[in-house]
Image 1 (cartoon, rainbow, N blue to C red):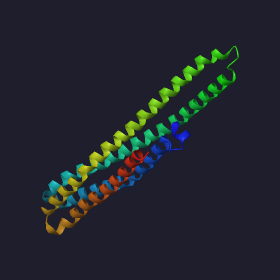
Image 2 (image 1 turned 30 degrees about the vertical axis):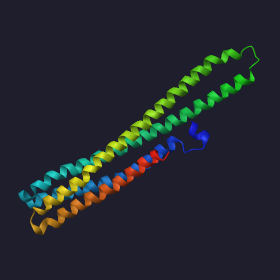
Image 3 (image 1 turned 90 degrees about the horizontal axis):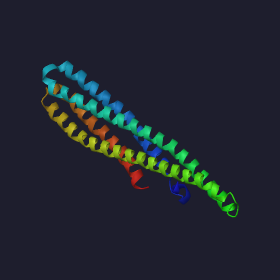
Image 4 (image 1 turned 135 degrees about the horizontal axis):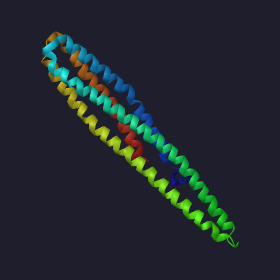
Length: 203
């Protein structure tokens, strides 16, 4: 809760902003899924000449599925972070009230009776802050994994183009469009992921 005291952007706000960035990728995932479906349909029409490309549609689908799952997982973690931040704020507030009451009752006979409650509250606050940090670490780890996975999208698009060149020239345009779509949409997702990572880096 030091972020609130020192006027910095609270980490739970950063978590929500990261989730918002990743939510934007869900539309991109739908585009990739549609692209894979179009490629499968085109491959089926052409037949054996497009077998190589047909095999690649599985990887295009996989890319979309992985990205969608990562976005949903990070969104869930952001929700958990928000709930935990609320609990932590309440615990920190309770602790400050305890300390204030103890200071005011410094000369009272019951002064020491608050020690146990203060220690328990301090322990709870410490545990909540550690749990919150673990959630943030998981979010950052998943973002790094997603970024690493997206690096393969460029290679996948290149392989799609190579396979497109092996298909009859009359049908090549369809598959080149698929390769370009994979490249473009993957770049859009990478941009969102980079923005999400920068939110943590700039905190």
